[in-house]
Structures are given as structure tokens and as C-alpha cells.
Image (cartoon, rainbow, N blue to C red; front, top):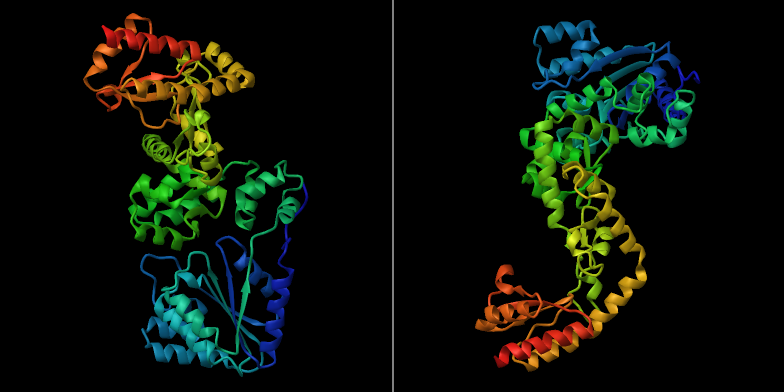
Length: 496
């Protein structure tokens, strides 16, 4: 396995930029550097590397903790010295800010102050950044603040502070992106893991990549799972329900579908986006990393996942299209909807088709669906085992391959449909235009006796009352000979 210890892949440019800002600060042109990136992208690792490169600087480190109730000015407790004494003595904000400024103004060396995880900072710490950002211009100080930028809302106090600091001459920004597929390939070399699959799983996030490689498996390692679920634990119950449903659906899910599955309020969506686990993509939500989706998916208890899967399937079917009669639509049938086209345009749509109509295999009670793989997977989880016997499968495959029969049957129906409709209308049995292989004929109170008379002649038609149309008969369109036999039997029944 390739030795990648100590490797800082694709971080040469941001590290060189940080070193340049350090040189500026050493010459008395202070800098506030905002280092942003998603969780696990390597912000701390970058700064730690700079510390190794600048051993002669005076380093101070403060951390903002992700507590439910953050400690006011928590990072100042970590900086030590006189500041720690003042913090313990509960000194006022002005005194603390002034003491820090004085501590950083001591001549003789470059001061580097690092405040990590500012996205968890309390408002007082955010104000501290504003205070120092305006006073670094003539100081030999490099102030580095790291924070997660995924899911940062417009109303977040940190976002407002970032806007203010952007106008200061001393402020600089560095954004860290996930690793490229090539960098992941270098890290995975010799690990036995397929690099492309590793990249798809982790999205190039260095933390996830490292943990999966160390675990030596393409599955979700316990460390990554715990990190994801710790993040999810902070969510409200409504947002967590939405997160679970999204994880059980797929990497990218339609918001409309999720609203149907969970009835989630907009506030739950906002909270989930702010968490950084998911990102907005127009009318869709997507997991930033497949490994995070899998961690959430695997955490859903079996008794809950079954219920959620059933809701997802019901919602997916509501977007589906029954294409059973599409084979018979021609010309200006403007209301015709092509389910395959819907599937192409809407990844969560399902088109349902049957072999009962054009293939003439109604006795097998068999059909099929056309959908994206994630939808097929959901249906397979819920269907009963052995629901289609081997003989039916052989017949269905043969029907799909026999395109000559399908085209011949379609041509017969398209030719006979208008002729039969006109002939029945002449006999006082009108029907609306049809795009299917049947007519819904209006016969009023003659429905029952006509149906019985046709049955005695060996011709089966369906009572429209069974499908919500009393006083109607549903008549399948056959060959010309079959239709002529129906008309003859119809005439005999009327004459009786």
C-alpha cells in the first residue's frame, strides 16, 4: 500500500497563500484569514501544517465547542495567560477584548491566533472577531478563523459578521474544496479499494476517505457513522423524520416527494439544509456525501424503515403513469401521456404497463414497470417473493420480443376502433373518443339485458357500473370478424 502519511494532497496552493499572509503580518500588515470548508475537509490539518512551517511564531489556539449552550467567549479560556485569569474573574467584554489586543501587540515576534469552528461561536465570540478584524492593520498578527460554510443561513450571526469583515482591508478568505477523484485514487493506491467507488462514497471528503481506507472496507466505518449521527442528533424530530425518509429514498430526492412522505413543514427543510447534511438543488434535496446517506439509512430501525418505504412507494406511485393503453393512441390524441417520457424527466416517476392488453396475456395477470433504479429497488423491497412464476416470465419475454405480433395487433385495433364506435352509435349506443383498446358505450337501462344476451352468444363485455359508470358497457375491440359477430348478436338482442 502506498505510504500516504504526511501527504497533504491538493492543499499546496492554500498553504502557500497562508504562508504569504503570514509574511505580510510579520511585516506589520496584520491579517484576518477566514478558512472555510465542509466538515472533514481538512481545515485544521491545513493550519497545523502551517504551524509546523512557522516554528518561530508565537501560536495561540482557541476552540468553539459545539455545545447546546455555548460558553460565552469560550476560545479566550484556551488562549491562556492573563486572559485566562480575567475570564475566570468574569471580567467584562471590553476588558477582555482590550487585554487580548494588548497581548497581541507585544513586539518581537509574529503572533498567530487560531480560533477553530467559529460556526459554533456564541455571539460574543463573533463580536470578538469583528473587534480584532478592525484593529489588525498595523499589528504583527495573523488571526485565523476556521468554520464550516455548508448550510450557513443568511440570518446566521456569523454570516452577518462575515459580511462586515469582508469590507476590512486586513481580511482574506481561503476556501477548501473536497479532494478530486485523482487525489482519492492516490490515497487509495494499494488499499484494495476501488478508487472510483471510494470517491462516489465519500465525495472526496478527506475525513471520510481516510476513515474508509483505514477500515479497509467499502462500507461505512464506525467512526464516520458516529460523526454523521452525532450531527443528525442535533436535528428536531420533524427534520430527523425528513432526513430518514430522504436517506431511504436516494442520494437526490424531490422535495415534493418528501413533503408527500413526511408532511414536513418548511422550517424542517430549512433546519436540515442548515445542518449541512443535505443541500438544496432547485426543487430537489441531495446528500452531500453518499456515505452520510448510508449512515443515516442504516440507523433507521427495521420496523420504521418498512413503514417509511411503504409511504415512499405510495408517493412514487402517485407520480406514476399507467401506460397500459398508450399503444393504442394515435394522431391528435392530445391527452395521451407517455410514462416513459415522464420517467426520463422525473427521476421519481414510475410508468406501469401490462401484458394483458396488446400482448393478449390477460390470463397471466402480469405486468412491468419502467423506472429509475432507486424506484425499482424500493418496489423490490416491498413485493412478495416469487410473485411471478417462471412460465409467466417466459411468456412475457417472448411477447416483448415478438414485435411483429404487437404491431399487427395495434394496427387491427386502430383500424377497428372508429368503425365499431360508429356502428354502435348508429344503433343508439354512443361512446366518447377512446385512446384505449375498448369503448365505453352508453346504453342506459339496457345494460343488464344486453350484457346477458351477449354472454349467451359467447361474447363477454363488462358492466360499466363496476368501474363507476352505471348504464354503460365496456366493450373490447377485436378483429373485424369478432366485431361483426358482436354487432350481429347486438342486433338480435335488440330485436328480441
